[in-house]
Amino acid sequence: MATGVDANAAPSEAALAPDIASHLQHLQVERKLAPRTLALYHEALLRLQRFAEGQPVELRRAQVHHVRRWAAQLRASGLAPRSIALVLSAWRGFYRWLGRDGLVDLNPVEGVRAPKAAIPLPKALSVDQAVTLAEAPAEHDDPAIAARDQCVVELLYGCGLRVGELEGLDLVAGPETAGWIDAADGLAHVFGKGSKRRGVPVGGPALKALAGWLALRSTMARADEPALFVNQRGTRLTAAQVRARLKRRAVQAGLPTHVHPHMLRHSFASHVLQSSGDLRAVQELLGHANIRTTQVYTKLDFQHLAKVYDAAHPRAKKK
Image (cartoon, rainbow, N blue to C red; front, side, top):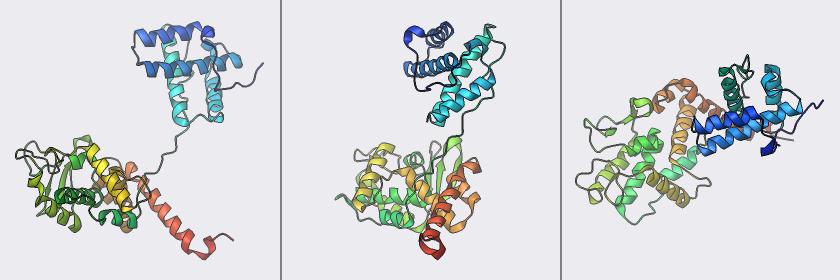
């Protein structure tokens, strides 16, 4: 009896098991899955069939220990945790469908979970890089565009705003206003995820950049345009335009990495945490509903400390 199987191989179309063929037809005709989703389920169920043939185990007689073993083989073959989760989801749906027709007594995939995927750390600029970006000389001949771009950078990095929050800022507060800046109080009022409003302090450099932009905004904006930031057509600046302008500014500043708006938000959070150590305050500033979302920045902070240790401590240096 075979003890293993190549998890990356698949049986031919002609060898498709009747139960799997019927289930895929159900997904296509009754569930009306998108072609790409259907293709992923097709591939996942072919893996299941090959495992059953290679053990051998009849599909309808598979048990939990079989599924756990097959999931382990997928992991050993190099399949990523997210891909394994998708495969298990397809298998789980298949056995749930068989169970509705009384063809299996239990779903052997229930309770089997994919290995946890490593959460990639957000990329952040160093403090020096962020300052270099903020203080980079204007690269546009139009003083209004230069002032606008300066203000955009200062607010993204100085307040940790999402690009959508920045894009939604209006010139003045109103009943339909998504966000605005109260320069007198030094607060940016934004409408974030989960339809939650929050106020974020606006620092001195950002307020100065805001005043510079407001002095020139009328030269670009249409008379009836409520948006704080406008493009060359005089209408609201879009998120895509913000990304393009920021990318160009970073290149002009000589930064060695692709800079995007959310990187400035990550940089804001990381630098505030490094200086204050106050995770709860960073959570409030970012508008995170769950503290666990903010805790990723403690790992960034540890990375920073580890680099300092490796560079400075005599016992950390390699012989």
